[in-house]
Image 1 (cartoon, rainbow, N blue to C red):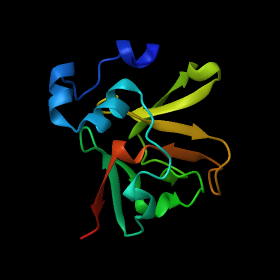
Image 2: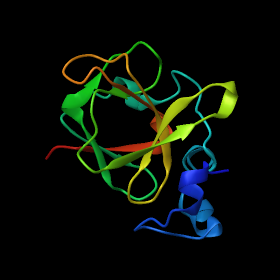
Image 3: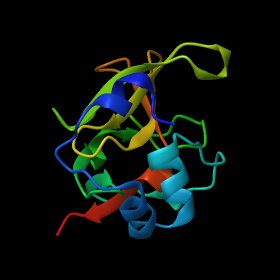
Image 4: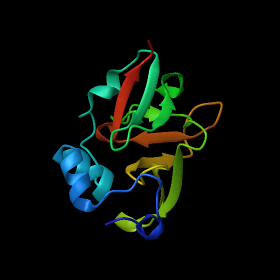
Amino acid sequence: MFGSKTATKTFPISKTDAEWREAMPAEAYRVLRQHGTERAGASPLNAEKRAGVFTCAGCGTALFEAGTKFESGTGWPSFFAPIEGATETTTDRSLFMTRTEVHCAQCGGHLGHVFPDGPAPTGERYCMNGVSLAFRPQT
């Protein structure tokens, strides 16, 4: 179910489909490995406001600093910029539209999409599925 670019790319963290299935809850697998989308407002990470880092729920890679998170009103955790080199993008032409898909640069897991309607300083809105993320509070 991966988009054409992620289906053929080899990522630094690689597992078989069975290993991915076993490594995470069914909903996380559906989003991260099958390009699903969680229901808006479903993630407890929407309300997360502590200092720390949002990581990939599939492989643990640090993706977003908590200071880049903002309230977008969309029902999904949103950020104005990822940690440099942590994510990659591909063109998503599903659902009869063209969007920019965001995936983890280390394991290829589907995180969400990026849109050009975010706040300064980047003007971008990384709209992420909360189930594709984990939060590591600053210690």
